[in-house]
Amino acid sequence: ETAMAVCLAAAGLFGSYLVLFFSDRLWDSPGWLRLGLLSAGIGITVGSVIWWTARWVFHKRDTRALAKLVQRRYRRLGDRLLGIVELADEEKRPAIFSPALYKAAISQVAGEALKLDFKQTVNPRPARQRALIAAALIVVAIVTWAIIPQAGWNTLQRWGLPAADISRHTLVRLTGFPSEMVVAKGESFDVNGAVEYRSFWKPGAASARFNDSKPIRADIAGTNVSFTVSGQVEEGDLTVKVGDARQAVAVHPVQRPAMRELLAHIKLPVYLQHPVRNEPVQAAFLPVLRGSSVSFEGRVSRELKQAQVAVDEMARPMTVSNNKFFSPTNKVDGTSHFAFTWRDKHDLAEAAAWQLNVEAIDDLAPRPDLGTLGRDLAILETEVLELNATVSDDFGVKETGIEWRALGQAEEQSPQIASALTAQAKGMQETEFETGFHFSPAVL
Image (tube, rainbow, N blue to C red):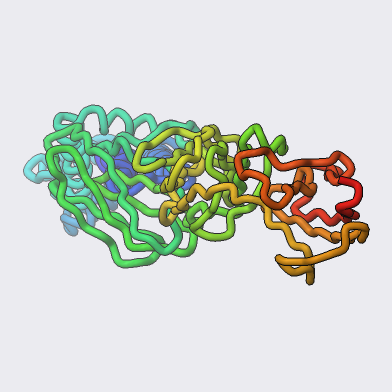
């Protein structure tokens, strides 16, 4: 019974420890499981001590109980042995007895008992079974400690301190995998990492599973492993498994950053005396007056990390601020091709580069219109001709007037201009200007 109690206590402690050891090889055993295993091991040990104490301290067998135990194996001797036990009890002796007769009876039974092995009265099988179980558990624990001592010590700490925040020691360690990833919605993506072997066990393959989908398997090349995951539209966890190591990667699918608005800041040539124009770009073609300078301001759907523009395949970085980018200034002398690219704060690029052709256009001469007045007209010398003129220009009219030459006057001579026949526009940005003049040959 003492051996049974000791073996049961050892089996409880070592058994609960080994359950946690092998559980940690499968997953990160939670605190409630570790507490339950420790409680079970201590409970079995305490129960064994209580059982042994009850049998050997509080309810210890007397000679009568031992005689009954012998009686089960040796029936005839057991009856006689029980009889002499009662004879030896002074409280149960009769008032008149013969000490010599009692002594002779006891000696006779004792002589017969010496010929027998009282150990045969006890069944050793339960004790042996418990001893084998305890020994097997102890041997397994010793072997695990000898092969992977770090894992054994780590399990002992986690078993003995279930409430402590002690990380699980794995035979394989995963490195280089991100804790979370922001990926393009609906597009496949790659997850890369490395494997560090900490023991004799070196698995050659790894697996990854997104939520409840089918696991993806990949071979380990040296110490590196890479997975190609199909496009996802919902958030979830990608669980990477190699050996007894596990790592969850939180996946957040989002739309790629898209262009919301593109403004062209056009600085016209100095002679026009115009302020900077801000024109929204609505198409892939933008006409700009030759000699102008142009820069671009773009607004994207998400905060930017970087952006660049390639002008005729010459890439240049752009300034970014929140979700906007600002390009360098470019001189417009011909046709140029602009390609805008960017990356957002999640390092996601645009779906495709934003293409724009900027074409230089020439500043055409103003276009006068005299209404219904013909190109040839005859009037009297004293007659007054009323001229109603409308002058238009794409970039504004500064002034308009009338100049003339007398018939027969050489073309090389400058035409005559009267200040009274000149009208100034109100500003430099009026694209259409209307005015009237009165012309008479008599006043020439």
